[in-house]
Image (tube, rainbow over all chains, first blue to last red; front, side, top):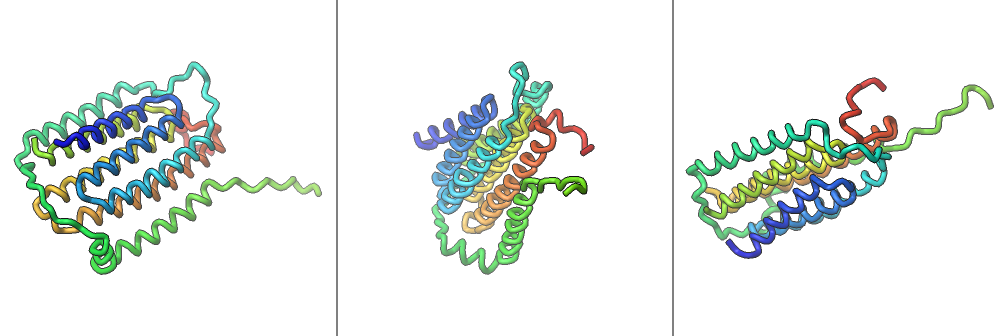
Length: 169
Length: 103
């Protein structure tokens, strides 16, 4: 239980809690970026270096920026008396707590968790070989999915064309 | 308290926090952030099992998480584009008031 692990866990969980409770949306987006970075650190501690750097590239570098853009483009004029929490927020909290209790209980009473650490290192070359041989079909489908998502997102968020005048020139 | 148990607990906690945020907040963007947190918790779960599990030489954990990251990014992009489009029409990003499909 190294000190780096404890610090990273506290950082990740703390910033996640902060991200879900702040009123200011930009602060939420920044806190969730810290969560993503903390998770990348946890991936690095777990010897999954490629995933750790992919997490930073994709989540911190793209998804967090996208969230900030969306926040800035939807500056809703919130009435000052309105709460940023839903009216039945307590039910949501109770359900989430119940989910955590059930999962933690299942983990506690499980006999499978005698995890022996391994020292198998996975190189990027091996990942590339696997992606190009065993997992080639999911890779191509993923490319198609990303293209569709890209085009779809642009079309959905595009400004509507100016409506033409009704017959008058 | 094996390391695997610790990582799985952190992953479960992160999932619960994302779930609570997705259910308790009014703004649609925060709901999406909660969903991303849940996906990240699942990724952490996968990598923890890949590292400490029974067959650490298999690549399934790494490849699955790679695809999960890519698909989650695509879904976040489309979801945020939808929120922007809805905001243009309804002038609100409040999930409680986007409750009708009437245009």
